[in-house]
Length: 115
Length: 117
Image (cartoon, rainbow over all chains, first blue to last red; front, side):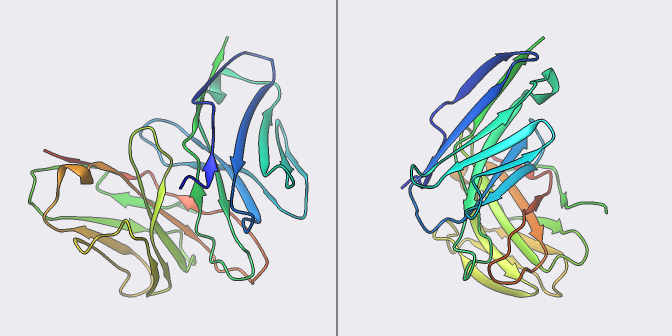
């Protein structure tokens, strides 16, 4: 029962262009969503998050969009840089009123940014 | 802020042996989580501590696994009678307590890579 899905195992993008990573979820009780970035042999690093009361959150080159009706979120990276090459994980938690924040992760998408 | 630390970073053991991993969370973070990540998958939740109390355990955590957080600071995860299927990256994360309805991220350590031969 995969409650959080990242259907694209990999994405290749040219430096300077936009990278769009997608994530779908099935559990309507999720109300907080996060993106993590992971380099080999390191733990996941928090990038950006969004709560279900918003549909967009922006932090520098990173923007997360949430479409609650479609149970879909996406991460946009503009402009993409070679240092962005990593595995990106989508994660979800909730409901916030009763949850202690246990995260459910997707399978990850390998992003490669070519110079 | 020294971040979450884990020790050891790598552990190779033979099937049937016991192993223990340690996690030191960010100071003043009273929530601590253990996750397991296998190749090609995202991290999967194992267990959660609020201070020294273990409040939830995943079904993934068989009776060969035990976790403790005796003084509400560092935590240990022990695997007894290891099996080849236990080979994975074991990740620890921490966060501060939050009021109901408020949100924030968990901060992960570098992980312990376990290889069972």
